[in-house]
Amino acid sequence: MITVAESDLEVPGSEREAILSMRDLKVHFNTEDGVVKAVDGLSFDLVRGRTLGIVGESGSGKSVATMAVLGLHNRARTTLGGQILFEGTDLAGADEATMQRFRGKRISMIFQDPLTALSPYYTVGDQIMETYRRHTGANRKRARARAIEMLAKVGIPQPERRVDEYPHQFSGGMRQRAMIAIALCCDPDLLIADEPTTALDVTVQAQILDLLRELQTEFDTAIILITHDMGVVAQMADDVLVMYAGRCVERGTVREVLQQPRHPYSWGLLSSIPQLGGEVDLPLTPVRGAPPSLIDVPSGCPFHPRCDFVDRVGGGHCASERPQIGSATGRGVACHLTDGDAERIFIDEIRPRLGGGKA
Image (cartoon, rainbow, N blue to C red; front, side, top):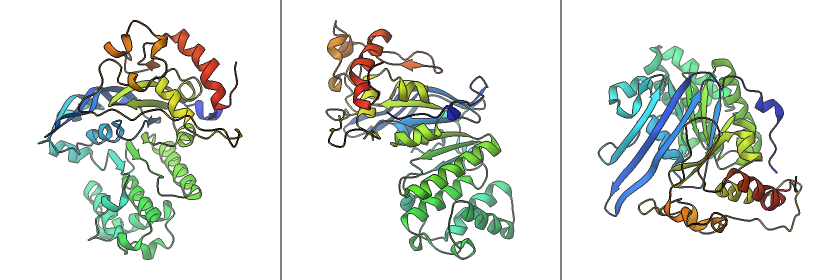
């Protein structure tokens, strides 16, 4: 099983006021084929100094939801509903002038694909300097020194020379580190990291994760970490939110979600991961089927066509009634299984797959 260190659980501040509160967020895209409900009623709170890990299959709405925080969707083709409250300001209804005050300085994002996020026409140093000068008013000399400092922080060798090079002169991993340097240069209050270590080897990945921890410790930064890597979630996150078909299906602390999951989709994600120390020839147990079309989401629980435990509920509730997760904070599971049934299934059937054995 994926283990969570005790030291990683001793994170104060869960009772503090949220820096970001998302309430019933809906992000729908109007297309020729119909309305794509990419995010369809997402709510959560995030306080300073804590890291929220968001996990789920590709297409579950993770990146779409966080891009809405920065106002990066085309408003002409996007219908936005609900609230995105950042220290009391509703960013869901904010105009572009308001967003520019927050974007890059107070809220920053590490994008998943540095090849498309970096401009090929400007040097890496110029792109870091542009962000820094815009939000701090620093002169070019000070901004250049900050760019060199940030490149050194993220592990770019010879930063004094590399600062004048273009993105095509960087390797894929170095471009990813340059994106991280841009995101961190203004010491943001909220950092959204969308697969920040995808293109990096394990050594550099460890360095980047250490850098994010240092930033969080020094500036009390709140972090949203989007990833498919459950090991990174176990290492970095304080709280975990599991998304499926644009909705949250499970939420809780990292220990609750990774070691005592209650939703069948969470069980499927964890069962798809090779277990350290497990049998070499033991096959993985992937989630059967494929994610649904977000234009035509199944009725009731959107996961029910792929769920192996529908017959444990009875009454046809899974196909007809949408389960509710409750409030935006604390432990929550959107499933028709009772807590007792979910606990018994996990102990008797799921945990042995994960190498934990029966209780």
